[in-house]
Length: 234
Image (cartoon, rainbow, N blue to C red; front, side, top):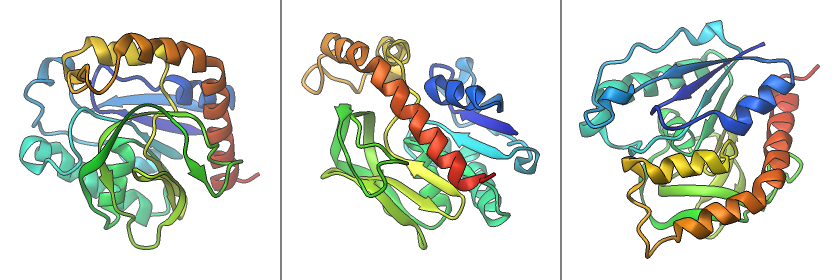
């Protein structure tokens, strides 16, 4: 089985999700949307691969907004079409953070600036804890989405919908893939300057991430196992 992990920027990583897929025998490939030398001018043309060559698309986060047509529309619009076409053809998509937002938009939902941004380790309410454990999950988002038509909400908290499913596809607002090293890369990178000191304490964020590391891996494994067992039953 082949999974294509879509990385929108060169700082992010497939992390724990990639590990979980590999542990289940999947072949994991990566596709980078915006290369390092275009992070400051990301509105570039991108040709997305043929999704029918893959059993699963994993669409990860991004430092940009899923509604920023002016700033990233030259690749965002094709990505929206790519995802909607994949789902319409019966393909499977797992969207993470920005990926969940762009998937929701591609399927008819909307994305906007959130009145309740979340940064840090947060618990959620889950209707299916065997598939979506209650966490805590790592969050880093300033936007939120509305559910697309036909979607089933799986988890939520006071800030936003946290997980949903549409057919064989699922979106999660949180970051199940993240590791402490990945969070540090975000903090060290210029794209992470939104994490102002009045929002989080970077030192404490990394310390809490270290404390959560083992359990976070277990939760990521459970999410991947539950999703794959649902979408790709034996």
